[in-house]
Image (tube, rainbow, N blue to C red):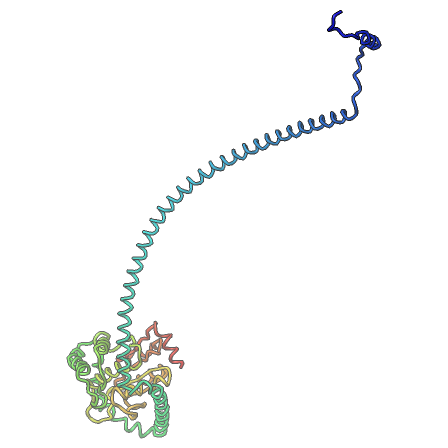
Length: 398
C-alpha cells in the first residue's frame, strides 16, 4: 500500500456515483430580471449615442457646406469691390483732371471780371468826380444867385405871386386898351415910320446869312467879356452873372451853328438854362439895342412854360441875371410869359407885323414844340434829358 494514497477513496467514488448525469440541452439558463434591465438600458444608451453622433456629423457637414458657400460669396463680393475700387480710382483721376481745368478756367474768368470791375470802378470814380464838381458849381451858383438854397421855396412862392400880379396887371392893361381903342390907334399911326430902322434890323436875325457873319467878332467879344470880365453891377439887359466856358459853348452853338433857331440840351437845372437864355437876350440887346430910352424894347422875349411856378422861376432868374425889374414884364414890355404855345404864337405874329423882333424861349418842361413856333426867326428851346425827366417831374410834384 502506498502511503501517499488517500485512505478513504471509497466515499468519493460513492459520491460520484450518486451524482446523476443529466443530458445536455439547448436551452440557456434563465437570467435574472436585473441583468435584463441592465442590458436593455445599455442597448438604449448605445442607440442614443449612435443617433447623437450621426446628428453631430450631419450638423458638421451642414456647417462646412454653409462655410464654403459664405466663403464663395465673400470671394465674389471681394472681386466686385476690387472692380468698383478700380472704377472709382479711374473716375477720381478723371474728376481731378476736370477740376484742374475748371480751376484754371475759373481763375481766368475771375481775373477778367476783376479787370472789368476795376475799369468800371475807375470810370465810375471819374463820373462821380465830375458830378461832384458839377454839384459844387451849381451850389455855388445858387448861393451867389439866391443867397442860399434855403430860399428856394420862398423864391418859388414869390415867383408865383409875381406871376399872378403880372397877370392881373396884364388883364387891367388889356381892359384899358379895349376901352380906349381909338386913342391907341391914333398913337400907333406913326409907328411904321419909327419902326423902319427896326425893319432893317429884323432882316439881320437870320443868323445863318452873310450879313450876320459881320457881327461874329462882336458876339465873340461879348462872350469873352461875360466869361472873363463879368460885370455884376452893369446896366439893365446886360448879363450880370458868372459865365463859364460850357455856357459860352452852348450859346455859341445856338448862334453860329443853329443860326438862332434850334434846341439845346438842358443843363439839368432851370437856373443854368435861364443863365444861357439871359446871355442870348443880352447879346441881342447889345446888337439891336436902342439908346432912345431906358424902357425901350428892341427885342421882345417870349417865355413859354407850362406851369405858373416855372414862369415864376423864369421871372426871378431873368431879373437876377439881367438886372431888370417887374416893370419890364408885361404884354407890351420886354418879357412876356405864356403857359400855352397858341397864345405865344399869336403874340409873336402881332410883333412881327408891328416890325418888332420876337425871341421865343421854350422851357425844358415842354416835351413837344408846337409847329406854329417854328416859323419865327429866333427861337431857343431847351430839350429835356430823357434820363432825368422822370426824376424832374417827381421833384416838381412836391
